[in-house]
Image 1 (cartoon, rainbow over the protein chains, first blue to last red):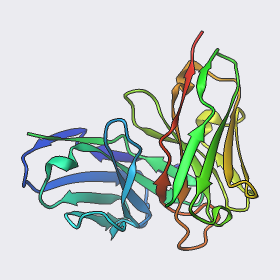
Image 2 (image 1 turned 135 degrees about the horizontal axis):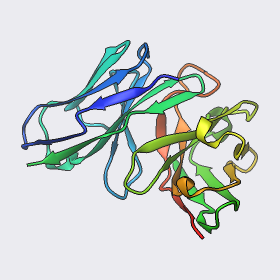
Image 3 (image 1 turned 90 degrees about the vertical axis):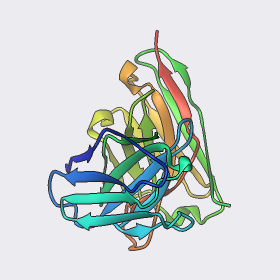
Image 4 (image 1 turned 120 degrees about the vertical axis):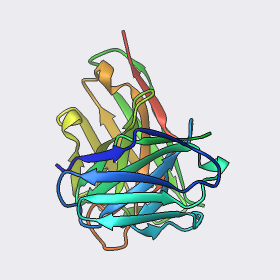
Length: 107
Length: 124
């Protein structure tokens, strides 16, 4: 099974900052990579699928890039509402693997 | 509105069993693969089990193989997870999730709709 490793584990940034989270796969994940946002006490929410496709209704400040073994989620201008934990997930056939999560805090 | 509503969680002793359910509405249930994802208190997301839209194909994570069984009733728009031989490490909030179906894969793609979860606590 492919293992997904996110970095950093936590990050603290100011409103308006550009924020980048990285997700690395133990072997090629092609472009089958999704990003989710989870706020405390809430279910995860799909942000990005197929590495770079923005889910309907998600603000355009979120973007995804990458392929193969390295992927990034970028928030172009951090907003207070973006305080959450972000997870990457590889999907292919029956395989579904999440990264360990990155907690984003607002300074 | 697309909606998933889980039920069936509770407190159970080690070695016990539960049957979790997920009622779906707002979409053609049989068209989409469905999955269970769990989250232990204060921990990350862990994928548990997945089933194709027809129900013919299923797959479990290694951590629950032989103990958990996923099933669906497309006539009732209901997804189920039978959890047996429960262990303390199975304590978690269990979410059901709907997979996208852009490419007509058996198991779908990313999870675009999630329920609010049902809590399973395994303790004596």
